[in-house]
Length: 377
Image 1 (cartoon, helix red, strand yellow):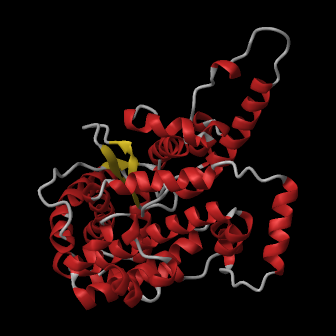
Image 2 (spheres, helix red, strand yellow):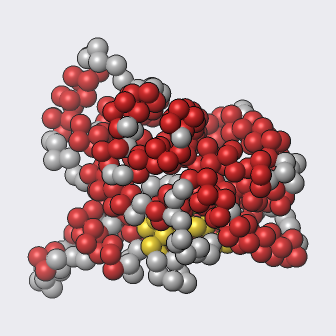
């Protein structure tokens, strides 16, 4: 699973140039967010220390073994170093995700004009602190929820703690154990299967480093102040609601209404990128799986049933609010796009998609791959 938080480092010198321009991260106390998330996150499945250590070792090995087949099928990242993965529990993932989100959303040091003067009683710092605490608690709740749902994640924004290189692959051991038990699949096969998907994300970003800045640029636009007054926003929403212009359904349509045209364009570009990344990873999993994972057919069937199966009302509401159902659609639409393009022209011509932002699929091309082939190839 790639996440534009998603998954985005205070210590990363290359991130400093973007931090001051993004700034929305200043509204969240990320230390409080991590502490809150760890405190309210649900515990993982009950396992012995032996089982947990065995799973962690097997996942670390599988993340390395997956790299070769993924590179061979994709034709990407050939000859590059194979980095290690971080094998985490839920609390460790929450810490890592909070750090990543802080970096992606940006934090900036106060300017000289914003520093307290020491004269009189300045309330600005107080209000900023209160706002940051509220945002921290809210972010912590989101992180706690996600910490029980994410099997693995490639974070292109946080440096590898061993090498300092940009990007790190994270695997959440208790969640993987919980799902393999629920699906009643062969643990070693399922763990390699998960790694094939996540390693594909690592290969995508390692072979195409421009993707990282592309994400940051669009997140910057998406989270920037619009400059609209309340009256202007109301007028724009009223006009949009009265318009006969077609809109997307669900959370995507809501974003289309609430955002300025510039913000929605950035949102659409991020959605198309996510659709491509997830669809490409699912395509690679299916291409590599039969030769590497003996029980891949039963795993795929059980996992797809789990993705689309019924959920309780509270889960449905939370998933809708944070866009997880829209993300599930990304897998389906993205894989269908990649499947058709690769079947039509082959993987090497398909890789033209990674050239630059102009070769990314447009919204009207995802469901009609022939349009992308005609425009780009």
